[in-house]
Image (cartoon, rainbow, N blue to C red; front, side, top):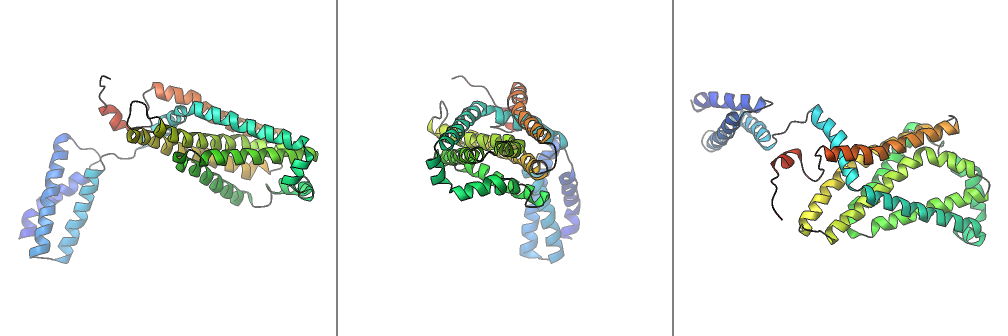
Length: 327
């Protein structure tokens, strides 16, 4: 009798929970019926614990609670806006930090490369002469063709994505991202010096540029985002340190997703293009186009997204409910 008398309410609760969109009145009714259903479940468990009925009502309440607690459905338009507005806006937010970090890292690589190439004793101390010859004559080129393309692309993507995420995750320290970027730039410079000294410049550039332009861009942006996270805590401006860190943290999460995509593309290029038999100039051209696309998204699409009101520090609902205040 208890279940039969309340079955219409449960059926109505199930119907409301299944609706994609709710009016204000339907939302209120859903919450009201959910509370009643929770009371009914409590009474059933204490007075007449029928397993089948308790299980049925429990499942119904779980669905209703999920509908109440998650008012937004993921739609294609939401996903598209995230890709075309939120991601570019997040990259645009750290654009100048990215440029400064990129220039600084490239400068470190050039200085390290020129210095070690013109000071053989320094280069020999860093890399033994026998190892240098092995790298220039065989190891550097074979690295890109040693493994199957698919496996190599996945391995490279996983490793680079982990390094980028680590730079961002440890950004609050203010030191680790700078250390990673410095060591990475130093290694590139020394490797370039090894290849130059042994007359393998073309091998170096034809294998490093196709994927390296985009890959290094992503790593530089990761380091920039990590250091900006530290700066937002150190210099919060008119916000509290907690609010400043929270706002920047949301941006860095979006940037992690963006860089995961970018490094995925870089990994595909490294796995299927860099070590392939394609014309070297064609491979370099593919790398240049991929890198140019990344920076166009950062500056051009990012500027348009910001002008269109995109803000990676808050959700669309928060942006709509934001109220301007004086001061």
